[in-house]
Length: 415
Image 1 (cartoon, rainbow, N blue to C red):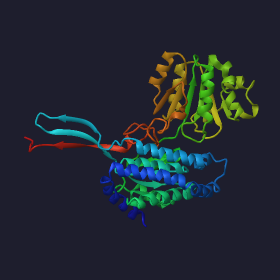
Image 2 (image 1 turned 45 degrees about the horizontal axis):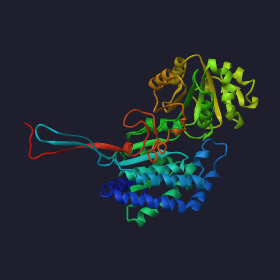
Image 3 (image 1 turned 30 degrees about the vertical axis):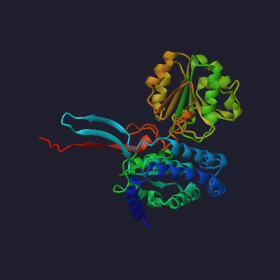
Image 4 (image 1 turned 90 degrees about the vertical axis):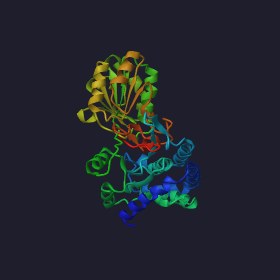
């Protein structure tokens, strides 16, 4: 099947989606969740083929890896999506004009949504489930790193769709070759929106070369600032969770900023990281303090390249600041506008931080690991949008919609 043929079939399937009832959509999603759990052995075998092609030291390895628990968690997310109310048809505004016209602003699907992504097979299921729930047709373009995993997942999705008498063309997985990418970036008559998920390099390439409208889901260069008023025990737990819960994800902590008046607490603050072998790149003041108590093999002096780096591994930068204002200035200079956090007890400091920081998600006294569609109650997510047009932050069901104006009259004509 040529790429053009796939795009044409997707556009035709868009009309079929219009007539699928909410009940039918939910039924398909529930059945898919069940089928995914029943196919764990098959998915793990195919995923292993992909894992064997990648070095275990590659930061993408953990993103690529499927486990029984991860597959079950994906299935639960699909069930959660099925149970959520669909935003389609929601009336956003309505008014009766003086001339008798009944005007409504109503949510509608975006249409044909395409996502281009790298070594994350969970994206295949998350994107399909969210798009299907909102009446969108999906065109997926995964990377070669996850080729076997994505094909296996698509086999299961199509099996359920065919069994439920829904056209399998409502979701398409393009080949991994570059020619497919080039065609997708130019599919202006077939694709309504293109969403890249992956490295900053991938996102930049799509943004710079796509003729299809793009929603950016940016890389996460994530900071946490430990204020002079910060609670030490809270800070230990929050920093540990943000850094080490899962190092390969975009909401993982990359840079800790600490107020200079709290430097003597730094070794204690980072003890959980020391126990897990996190390598630190520290500025001179922080380095001097850490040298007395942090494992020497895991401590390096920082240079400019370590600030503004997304590590995706057991590595983290440390920066000393003398004020909240200096912390905000540093974050502003190096942030990717994804997720930023403050640990503080001073309400004024918290409010100033939350107001001043320009990011999709801003936190006080909690871990940036919560930047996730499922954690925000959205069921799952398409990605974390770091732009400001259309969507920002975790993109769930509502973010996969646009709207149209519906105007009903009784024979009025404009004078």
